[in-house]
Image 1 (spheres, rainbow, N blue to C red):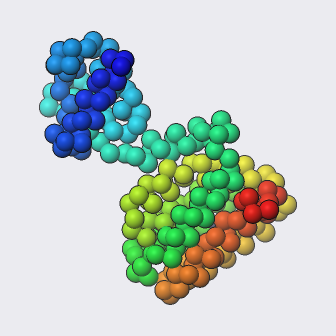
Image 2: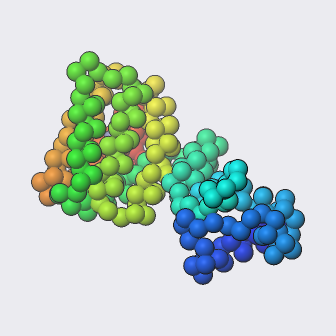
Image 3: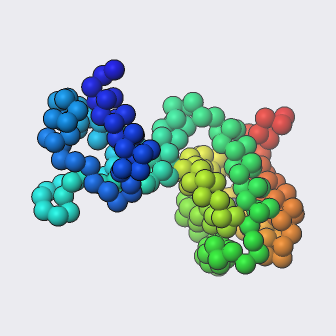
Length: 233
Ligand SMILES: [Zn+2]
């Protein structure tokens, strides 16, 4: 085992055993290096890896706030990992589209009618209805936030984290696809109408219908951009 891996597995053991928890602090670099009989470089390397994974925030300076703190930020770490893998073409857009349909139609079916996140969703739709029309880029940024609010409304933290991690990948492929659309304004007004229909279905307790509408909405945009339905042919 490489020495930084010793440090990684020590930290993982501490977390699993509950000896370290979110908000807790890692021992000082020198202390940890002595305790585990590894170099300070190895300790730093392990901390950098866990920082990138959204598990630690490395301390700066000195005083009571110094030191490396345990955090829990799965979404940003997963998000940047997924974005990079989409960029390297290892995560095909078709698979992201299918995953969205899977997660979002489940969430739309499960979201309680009075979930507070639905109010956030409504505010986002109002912003997208701006009479002067929004540039595609701004529209799509609000669009993805609407979908995240809808997913959050289902109240499943794992689904929310997965959707949050897909955020940048979704925004990236959507922006790429707008270049293929015959007429952005026409598409935008259709998307707006679909969003309102999805939210109305959730609000009125028609979960099954909301699930169908959101699936058709996601696949429709993808197909309109000339990419065919996600694997369905
Ligand atoms: Zn949408």
